Structures are given as C-alpha cells and as structure tokens.
Amino acid sequence: MKFSLVRDSRRGMRRVNEDRVGHWESPGALLMAVADGLGGHLHGEIAAHLAIESFGAAFLREARPKLADPARFLSRTMAAAHEAIVRHTEKLQLSDMPRTVLVACVVQDGYAHWSNVGDCRFYLLREGRVIARTRDDTVVQLLVDEGRIREEAIASHPERNRLLQTLGGYQAPRPAGASARLAKDDVLLLCSDGFWGPLTQRQLLHGFIANPLGQAIPDLMALAEMRAGDECDNLSVVALAWGEDEVAAADAAQTVPQREPATDVQDFTATDLDFLRMSDEDIERAIAEIRAALRKNAPR
Image (cartoon, rainbow, N blue to C red; front, side, top):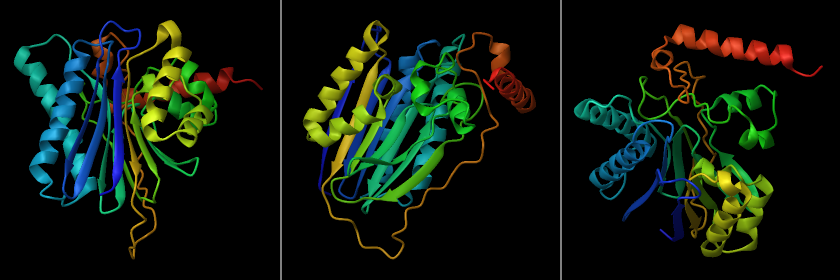
C-alpha cells in the first residue's frame, strides 16, 4: 500500500491529556484509531487507553496479512473494547465507570472501512470536498438532523457535550459503520472533538488543499488551539493521504450502511448514576420531552 501518515496529540489547556491515538500495519491492511476519554468521569484516560489497546491487540492477532471481514472486525472490537472497560471497573471496584468515545478505520484492498461511537470523527476528503463523515452520537446531532440548528452551531451549543453512547457506561454501544472505495490523493482524517470543534469546515478543507499532509496537520492543530483559546480541549489526529490509484472492482459503488436510530440513550455528562440506569422507555421519553421543548421554544 502506498500512503503517508501523520499523527499528533496535544494536551491543549487541560491538566492531562485523556486522548489516545494508535495505528497498526500489516502487509495487507492498516488500522487507525482515535479515542477521547471523558473528563467528566473517573479515569477517562484509562478508558481511552484500554480501548486503543483492544483495537491494536485484535488487529495484530487477526490481520495475517489481511482481516477476513473489516466491517465485522470493527463491530466486534468496539464491543470487546467496551467489555474491557467494564471488566477493569469491576476488577478495581471503581465507584464510577470510565468512559471513552472512539473512531476507527481499516484500510484494505483499496477500501476504507470506518466505525465510531461518540463524537470522535472520521472524514473522507477528496478534491477539496467532504465525501463522507461519521455522524456524532450526540444530542446536538439529533437537533441538526431535525433541522433545529445548523451544523456550524454544534461547537458552541450548550448541549454539545451530551453523548448518546460511549465505550464504558451501563449500556453496550451500537456503533455506526460504513465503507468507501479510495481514489488517489484521498485524505482519511480521524480526530477528537478538540480538533474538529474549533474549526469550520472551510478551514479544515483549506488546510489540506493548501499543504501536504505533513504541514497541514500541525498547521490545523495550531489553528484549533488558537481558536479554542483558554477552553482548548485535548486534541488528537491521525491522518492518511492515499497514494494508490482507484482499485478496479465489480462492486465499485460506495456502500454506506446506516445504523438504526439509537434507543440506548444516555446522558454521560450527568452526575446522577440513577439517570444512567434508566430504561430504554424512560430514555426515549426524556428525548421526546427535549424535542417537545425545542419545538415549543423554536422561533416562529
């Protein structure tokens, strides 16, 4: 495989860096992952570390030299990472379960396969355009989907930190998954919200249009830090520039399967553990109440 890869992780203005980044390569496949441990809960950095470690170990075990089924690998390993965090919590008898969000991508046979839980993002960039992006597992993403707010308002919205699912927590995650055939000079970008949050899409795209990958990443990291200022979160990136021609295949069409609307909804910014143990019905009722309030208060 022909590609260039750049990764970076910075603490920003936080006391510790709870992000973790990893990439692993075999003769026939490549795996990249970014995890963002949740700072509002105990040991977020441990959850991120366990998740990244789970992905690396699974890839090194199964990519010989390729993965039998990249999409299934991502789904299974998300579940395994979640279970590793749960076991760690039980073993140490922690008072609260560590949590992390994560995005991962496998590149194999000229295709990218990606999956996410939470609000770490995957972007597929081609010729100055966003060809594909993961959908955030957040309340504000629901508001965007319903047309209540614009995409540009996500980073500054007061509900931006309310996550619908994570790795760790009291409910098993239901990760999204998709894939696409790669073309020469495509850029695959995996990043935490500390990176994408302060940047507009135009700034993001311009950074990759104007410079090669090795310059674009540090420039954009610096720009995100500057725009976030004193509120700068941990920010982490792993990015790949694809160097091979588009593969010839009978099934050349891009495949983008979608996950069913999540019902295992949790507010992971809450401090009340009783809320985290709500039933699916209670959770759906809470979301319905939020939507009703938004409709009532929406400008007419």
